[in-house]
Image (cartoon, rainbow, N blue to C red; front, top):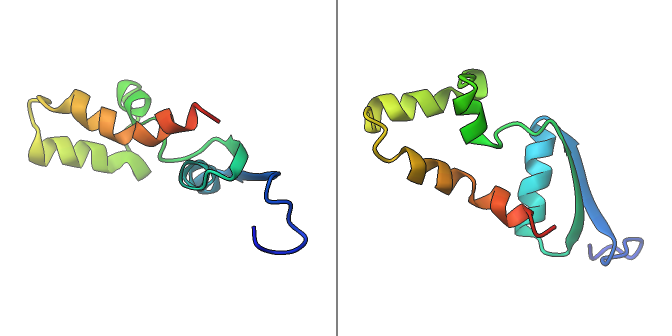
Length: 93
């Protein structure tokens, strides 16, 4: 944003798959990004992935975590709340 050809008041982020997830992360961490266009962002909406029973591939760690640390899913709500903090932060954009 410090480059002379960039209008720092008109910066956006776009990306697909991992780039979509990174676009969301960048917009959450950099308040000067005022538009974001993620396309099928990976590693987002963990709870929906879990509810759809699609916790595999890049999301396999969800199953691993619950199997190793919370077999009875006592902390499931807290875990998904923590994982969605950045998503909630993105709603203001």
